[in-house]
Image 1: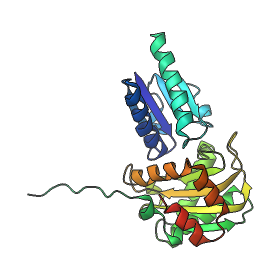
Image 2: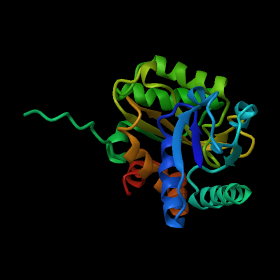
Image 3: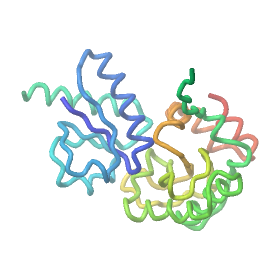
Image 4: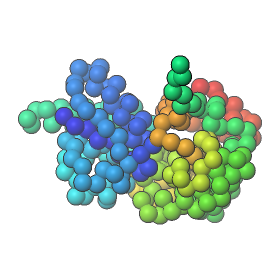
Length: 94
Length: 157
């Protein structure tokens, strides 16, 4: 599955999110392609799951793929919980 | 035989210095908070004055998603917006201000990041994320009354 992590400028929080999600998925034995994007470059791209900070949702209305919004980008528990739930849902839906 | 140069990797202590922290400032609003954090980057030679304008523009155009956690904003703009070298400023506010985020306002910890490329500051940023996920560190940052105290906590990773 393809996961996109988003932030505004593409050089910070999206990369941090990607590294953390890679870790989480590895620990669960789940394989996925996780790619960091800045909002501008992501438009028009496809992903099964899009992980972004809350308040970015307005820019993601036309995005294909399930959007997972993170309120606290430094809260590993929140990220793990939300991402794993979305990943499992996606894998079950296949 | 020549080897390609490894890009430098900046740790948090490389990005933050005594010149880039300021404790317990009083500001009117998010614009002034941005100006003060930005001025620390300018005075320390990290960025040019236009970087402040750019950080404000990013907030206005993309919305306040940079309020990445309750009470915490990570201001930033692009490398080509006037960054001279990587750096991170921190200003703590005596009275929090709103940046317009639906859930994480009001803000009292104002970080301003200047990056020169996509990855050299990543290690420092990860160290910052680690610190900010620690409730005791957050308490310490919020209770520090002097710049020295603040710096000490940031460098405690």
